Length: 309
Image (cartoon, rainbow, N blue to C red; front, top):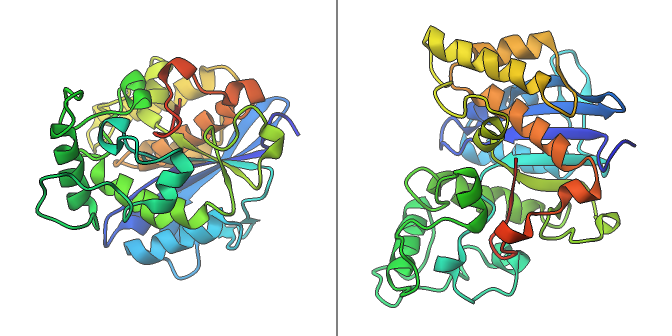
């Protein structure tokens, strides 16, 4: 096997109650000595039996897939399973900033295990629990206000600040953060190993596939490509998607994207297919070696999670 994974997956995550299955895209790449070859990309609704579209059934299907229990059946009839030699990049925040968590959790694994019921409640708050994305946002904002050392209401993690990501519990991030952690991470944690929080210095001890947090906009920015302005139905936006796909293939290490996948990603006005491809490419880069998987310690808090770009 070349690197730490012979197959990589990128998941662009959707958390809409009725359309998560159509908004969550999966991309798959195979790895060899020449690089990564992205050969498949489709929605959760089209990848799994029953065509799950609503959030509950779509995320349940995704969990079964990531746990190795359910195959992804491609258009040509081929079946793909997430095995122990795979790595998966998920495009949603894996954690919250310590500015709002405080010292409640010893490490990230303890946070995921107790989320959201175990979150420390603010001193002055009208609720007695965090049970949906809106209450998560309200909780985080109040926790930040009560933290004398915080200079923010919607605070970022160490890793968010370095790649220009949004606050995990803010206006943009609250939905994918809440549903991603509750419905996906907490459900797969016994079947996978989360990097870098559970890999540390010993990648040989990884139990099951490696799962990491991806951020396509950050990857595109790192490569000098369009990190914004590529989602939409105008010709300018389509050209930007095409340029991003071209730029991915011109980067190092080598990336090859099948022509049909390039066409689909360029034609997807929401940019979700492109983001899934980018997440797969970022996952490939992060799992080329144990050294590549190591976080930048200057911008990493082990309780908050870490973004690979």
